[in-house]
Image 1 (spheres, rainbow, N blue to C red):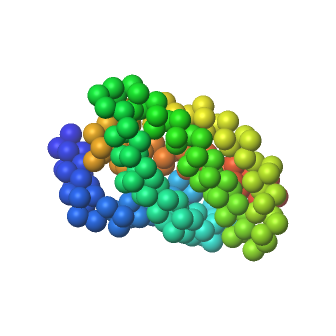
Image 2: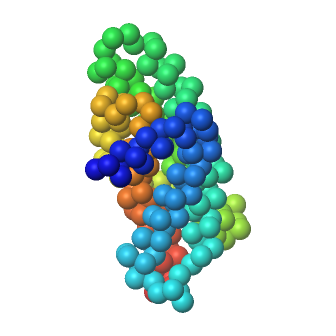
Length: 190
């Protein structure tokens, strides 16, 4: 328990000093680990068949695109939304959820599906087809999973621990998203 408290305190201090840098570092860890878990654990790849480029691409998409957008959202939009609703945690949480899942979430999900395929194939049209084919399933899964996590985060988790909380949960979500985003590629190479 002391170790968890130490890590939490260290993380909080880093978030206070260098919020974007800390979020990028967290994303490097979670995106790399989730793709490794997907490849080794679910796809049963060996070290010889492991796709290092895919892991690198996932890490780059997460750190160079997803994190900056999420940082802006959580540091600018969420405080703006919550300030509109004084007092009521339920109203604040509901407003954040509605805004999140009607704007940011579809945008980031589409971008993720597009970028994974576009990086893999170096083909813009393939990226667009990936969004067209995979977005519906991914968004339904997103709506079945993340609103509960976000409701807990917005209502129960202290603001300085929300990124860490979301990152731990996101590690497992990343395994699932890697499977969806790389579905065709996995089927072809097995």
